[in-house]
Image 1 (tube, helix red, strand yellow):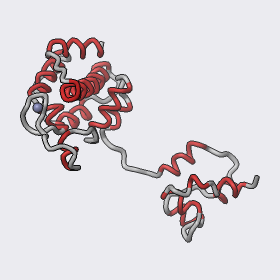
Image 2 (cartoon, protein in one colour; image 1 turned 45 degrees about the vertical axis):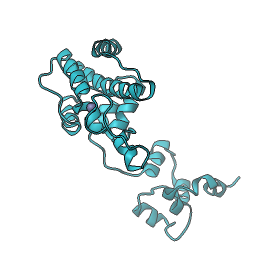
Image 3 (spheres, rainbow, N blue to C red; image 1 turned 90 degrees about the vertical axis):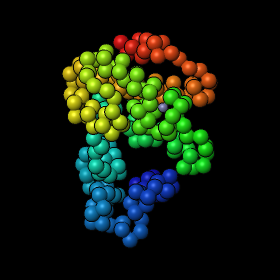
Length: 210
Ligand SMILES: [Zn+2]
């Protein structure tokens, strides 16, 4: 089987990043290097040592790193907390304010406190319920002050809770846990009509974190 067969694999044709890689007027070594595609058939044939890592990086391309990446990458929380946190950091959870823009729901009020809109900023930090939860979390970790908005809190934690100190790691973990459990609480109230008391909720959070 000749090497050209590998490069004509149909599965790659649908990817815009590999379309010029596979043919067309941009398919010259100089053009591909200018575009960041450091790998083509001729180049691969010339190299002595193949590196999956370099190929992956070349196909992936270069993107600006987001500041909050260390909140999820260096987080010792369990994967489902981190996944919910990761989505929340990008405002990708399906809150009612997002669903309303697609015409899926009309009622956008917050089920946790019955006021304001069901948005990331409100659910996780501004609602009365979340404020009480954060008060407990801050008290537990000897942090003074009240919870502010989403932007302020993430900016603070990125600046203050980096590194591998135990205190920073515990706070990053508890942040992911709190975001997940607030989201879970909101969903249970909407879909299962279950409401937990703040005391039982606090025990649940601390038991999971410790
Ligand atoms: Zn609310």
